[in-house]
Length: 410
Picture 1 (cartoon, rainbow, N blue to C red):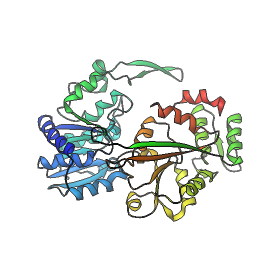
Picture 2 (tube, helix red, strand yellow):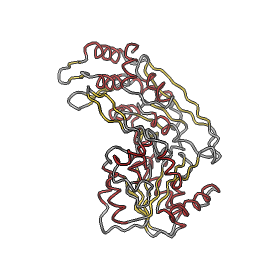
Picture 3 (cartoon, rainbow, N blue to C red):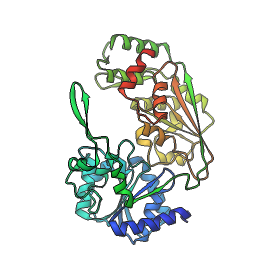
Picture 4 (cartoon, rainbow, N blue to C red):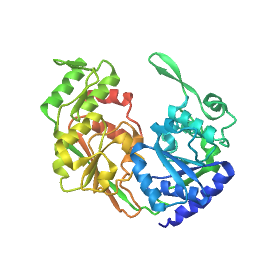
């Protein structure tokens, strides 16, 4: 294979940065080729064994890129949930951390960030971090992505709280009557300190000319769906013969209505049930002659889709690529690290509360050669989805405060 000109340039720059500092952060927008570029850096520096850590859904795609490149090093591709399987006998001189922003929890490090810390401390590899959105919600998310690396720019701080003295404006936020410290207001100085380690590249710079066209389609759900939503809003509880739907808090009410308006519900016992097949049947009939990628939010929604689509639907990327089947992916797990370029269009069975989910998932079909993406949102008439959509399109997460304002109109 042959790298694109900009990838070759990033490989050269990345190699220089990593030799000088021990790590490099490739902040390249989705579909610009972060994976291949990172493998190219490893190959140019004579890597012997690479540990590539990613999301589970992306493993097969990364393996394909590795085989296509045929580099001179061995590779172990695992997902973050399998980090505990790496033993002291496992040797690697390079470590690639895909979707590195997923390690950005604060003020305390997440389990995966701690596991990565242990591996870097033990093996002392060169490190390449990858993300199209390094700090999607707060600059404070940067600290735990790099705190394990010896030459990171924040190494003088023993922990996140010390780091906050110089780089975070700590405020107080009332939660349930208590004032809780809010560490989300990270200062621009964080990204300024990271500048020497970053290589940033956009789709526009890569020559992408794709136009994304979105269409919202409203479908009328069954009377059962609307009656159940109405009763829950009024009484905050629906008692069945064996199960209970409880919405005794605003958060629960928001979640239950989000489920119900798309045709499923999770009971207080933890079990779930399908209520309404309207959305799934509409999608099957409306897009019957196309190969589509479907995004859903709740686990029960996958059961709905499988029930309606039968054998024409898969949730495995390899099967989707190598057959005429459609694919269904949960929004959060499918929004990063995979390509759905074989799809004619993307169809959303439901919508996530996160603005990050909106912007990342809708870009899964984009390639350098593609000129147009068609994205369809299937919303229930009178449901909650329209309000969520208005928030995330404007790069705002849909929060409980939004829901309380919208509740009177639902």
